[in-house]
Amino acid sequence: MKLKNNLLCYKDLYIYQESNHFNFCLDSVLLARFVVLNSKTKRLIDVGTNNCVIPLILSRYTSSKITAVELQKSSSDIANENVMLNNKQNQIVVYNEDINQFCIDKNNMFDVVICNPPFFKVSKGSKFKESQEISIARHELKLTLDQLIKSSRILLNNEGKLYMIHLTDRFDEVITKLCDKGFVAKKVRFIYSKKSSLKSDKFLVEAKLSNKQGCTIMQPLYVHNEDGTYTDEVKKYFKD
Image (cartoon, rainbow, N blue to C red; front, side, top):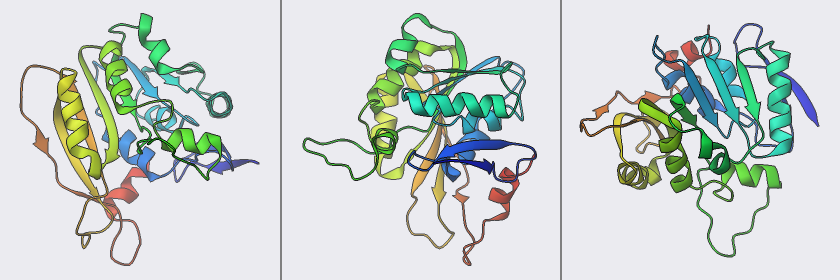
């Protein structure tokens, strides 16, 4: 069933979502607001855009062209509807393609690649209880970490940056694979549910194709206060 929702507290921003699809969550907001936009940022691409939440949020802060790529036809259809619903068709273009194929003739075209990727590896004999759409969004069935980083290297120009959110349990693997493909992590921010949390759940990373080492570990990002309400920082992310 397709539902129309207000996109958090963003004024006049709405999205359609399907109940049996992977619907947007706070991760998309945190990642979108982690992206650094400046006058040199002319072309952005969101890999695995799902219902196009990240491009829609970014469109509030930049007039640059945004490409959104989504493998699943049903999700890309909704992404297109959301672009038109918010009258962003002159800025955001959605492609229903496999990023591994899409990137082939797109060398050095983008300044920024953004991805909220599938978090979970797939082992032999894995079984999934979710719908196919949700399984593909959550698990590396169609897009592995290696494939994402390889595609990003092709898509980015020499000064380009890759922004990603991932599980902290896979931090070492992510950083290692980035380095293997010629990226250097320039900024990392660990995300905690609360200040009292003993362990980070996820992290945000900004990576760049560069020979220059040096990474800034930013202040932790706490999502909730101890009473379960959002922290002041997270509340600010919901505002224009």
